[in-house]
Length: 271
Image (cartoon, rainbow, N blue to C red):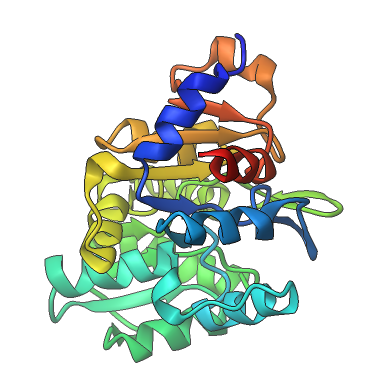
């Protein structure tokens, strides 16, 4: 499959008013910002366009991500960063008000849930929520399985199976859920990318319009699928997981393929 022609790229970028940017593999790799990423943000701002960072990785709080971006000379406000953990909090508050939650997550995610007013418990919860828990223990896994078998609803922040690191891949939320599903026979409901709950929250928070919003990232089944399956745009960048050759076998077809955010910035500069 060929990369999108320049005229089509120009048209799509011109139409886009809000860019929802993935982070790892799209804006940075580990602790290294990708070439041209900051320049893209500057060109978007010059053209009167907005951007929002969104990551499925629920192991860190938005504050920690803001601090990481600041170390890369990218200073943003709290309203410019969102995680699958934020989407889950909003889902619980709007769709499951007053329900008790047993959370399998990092201390940072737990603090975010408490700040969001979620009722966290250690016994007989109404709901079990699985996040990307880098502090996972066998006790947490056992308790989650027991609660789900006893009738608790099974929710999860995002479906990513592996998380990329500078040293390779490590098990992510989807892998943890697979273990729980195998033990309990129950499947979780996910709310992060590529699901509708993410798009609804992005539009709610930003006031953006679905048809002029583009989800940008390096993964077809999460980043790109969020846009193309929910009435928005999906742009693929080739700086992370997905290679151009992967497109032929993929059911998810991006609206446009760019080599990087740097290329997107260069095209914006010429508009």
